[in-house]
Image (cartoon, rainbow, N blue to C red; front, top):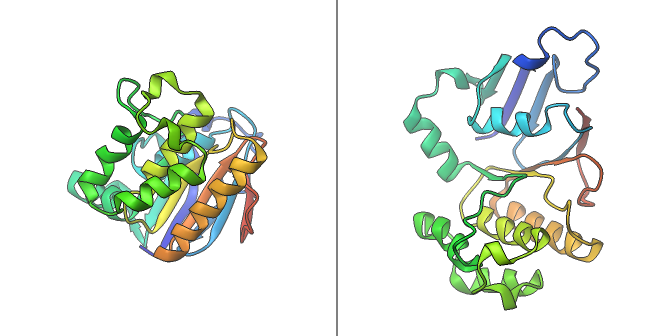
Length: 214
């Protein structure tokens, strides 16, 4: 996939509001493969909704979302399954990890489905992110910041044209934020992929091509 377009898109919950000032809602916006985007927002302006709309998790919006010119409302379940397996990867704000499983088990769930990353690379990322000692720790016993790093590793265990990261460093210090950014951009560059990052304040310092204000 090369391009995502939003045309007059607006969450249904905002439909009757006339005070919306946004670079995205009710506008025509394009996200291109290979580029880096930052979406800055205040809480409650639809930041996570945007990710969910594009990922196909929700469809309670007005307007259109197009993938390479095709309206996603026409997509069938099989198309969404293929899309999420080979074209889109999403690091959810709430992470969606399994608390009863270990950090490595959470990562392996996806990697066994895709067979994409080598175990050596995964362990290298754990080391780089300072959580190599948490490989066998259960997610429920880890801090939220540690869980964010595990969720990133899991998100990178598949091919993608676009990587969505929803507030990925909200609980990380500057050092780990910088390392996370480096890992993300290196993997995206390797795949020729784009990154769409969201933030309500603290964000990864990357050389963004475009910054939108939601």
